[in-house]
Image: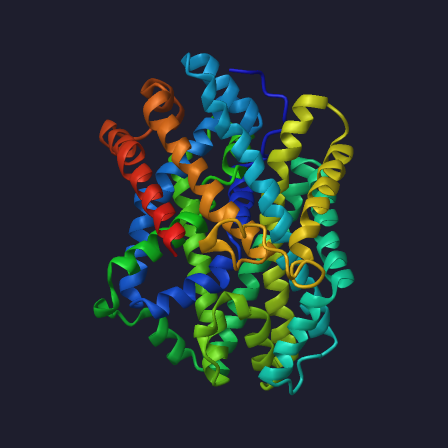
Length: 456
C-alpha cells in the first residue's frame, strides 16, 4: 500500500468523535424520533437496530478498513487497492463518487446549517416570544425568500468549515469535535431534563417506546431500513477518509459498532429532548423534519424558559450540521492535498468557494430560482424545486449507488485475507458472518432502499 502522507488521529476517541459527528445530523434529531412514533414505537426501534447491525455496520466496517488499507483519500485508496488486488480500473468510480457525494451534499446541506445559524440569532434576540403558527410560517418563508441572507448564512457555514478543515486533522477537526460532540450530548441531556420536569415527558415516552406491532408493515421495514442506512453515514466518503487516518492498532469492528451505537443513542435522546416540548405545547409531531423551523419556535415562544431552550435547540442543530460538514469537506481536501501538495488552508478555501458557487442554486431555491425545476424532464420528478432535486440526486441516487458498489467491491473483489488481517475479528465465525452480510444482505438491502426511494 501507499506510504501515508496524511496525519493520523491522536487517539481512537478522536476518530470516534469525528466519525459520529459526521454521521449525526438532522435525520437523528428529528427524523428518527418522528418515524419511530409513527411506525410502532419500540417495534420500529427493534427493526431499526436490526437494520443498523445487519446492513449499516458491515458497510461501515468495510469503508473504514478500506481507508486504512490505502492511507489516502477515497480516490487514492481505491486506486491503491485496485493495484494490489489486480482488479478492474472501473472500480475507481467508488473513489469519484466518494468525492462527488460530499461535494453535492455539502452544497445543499450548508443551506440548512445556515438556517440553523439564522434561527440561533433569532433565539438570542427572543424573536419567538408569543409567536403563532401562522407568523412562524411567515418568518421561515421570509428567510427562504431572502436570497441575500440565505447566501450569507450558507457562506458562514462553508467558510467556518473550510477554516477548521484547513487547520489540519489534529489542530482543526480533532479540536473542534472534542468540544462540539460532548457539547451536543450536554445540550440533549439538558433539554431532556427540562422535558422530564416541566413538559410532557410521559407523552413522549409513550409516543416513542410503546410497542405497536399492528403498525408494522412492509413499508415500516423499508422506512426503518432507509433510516438506518442514511443515519450512520454509509457511502458518503468520510468513513473511507477518516479510516485512512486510523492507527493500525485500532480495532475496526469495535469502532464500527460504537459509531452505530452512539448514532442511535443520539437519535433516541433527541426524541426524549424534543417531543416532550412538542406535546406539552399541543403541537403535532407529524409536521416532520421539513417544518423544524416552524414548529419548534411556536413551542419556545409560549413556554417558560423558552428563549433559553430555543437557543439550545438551534445551537444543537448547528453543531449536528457543522460536524457533518467537516466530514463532507475533508475527503475533498484530502484528495486535493495528494494531488497538489499545497497549504491545507489554500486547498480548503479553494474547495469551499467551488462548493459555495454550486450551493448558490439550492440556496436560491426559495427565491430567485423558485420556478426552476432541475429534474423537470422526468415526469415523476417534475414538481421538485432545486433544493429537493439536489437532495434527490444525492440521497436517492448517488449515496445508494456508492454504498452498493462498496459492498460489492469489498465483498467480492478484495481478497478475504486482506480484510482478515485488517479487521482481526475474534473468531473466524464472526469474520465469515460479516462477509456473508456484506456480500449478499447489504447489496440487496441497498437495492431495496433505492427502489423504495424512486417509487416514493
